[in-house]
Image (cartoon, rainbow, N blue to C red):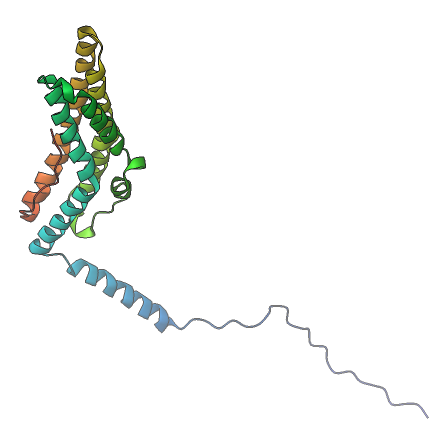
Length: 209
C-alpha cells in the first residue's frame, strides 16, 4: 500500500527587522516644549531690582578689595618709603629697600593668595550690563606686572650709585607709574559707570596713584 503524501505547512519567512519600536507619545514632546517656554519666561521676568543691583555692586567692590588690597597697600607703603629716603632720611634706606623688595613680590599672584584667587573671579549675573570682567582683568594687570615692575623700579632708584644712574632709574620709574595711572583710570571709569547705573554709594576699592 502506498503511504499518503506528506504535506508541509506553508513557508513563512522570518522577520529580520528586529523588535518593533514604540513611538514616543506626542504629549511628551508637548510637555517638554511647555516646560522650556516656562523656564524662559521665568528667567525673563526675574529682573533684579535697582536696590538689588546696588547691593550686588557693593558686594563686588568688597570682593575686589579683598583681592587687591594687600598689593595696593604695599604700593602705597613703597611710595612712602621711597619718598622718605629721597627727602633726606638716608638712615631709612636699608629698611626702605626691604619694604620695596617685599611689596614688589607681593603684587604677583604667585606670591599672593587673595590676588591669585581673584584672577578667576566671576561677576554676578545681575551686573552683566557693566563690563566689570574687563575691569577685573585690568585690576590684575595693574598689580601684575605693572605694580610689581614699578616697585622694582623704585628699588633701582634707591640703589642707584650715581646721580646719572639715579636719573635714568627715575625716568624708568615715572614711565611705570604713568602706566599704572592709565590702567587705574580705565578701571575707575568702568566702576563709576556701574555706580551711576545702579545708584550704589559703596566705597570703591583702593588703588593708589
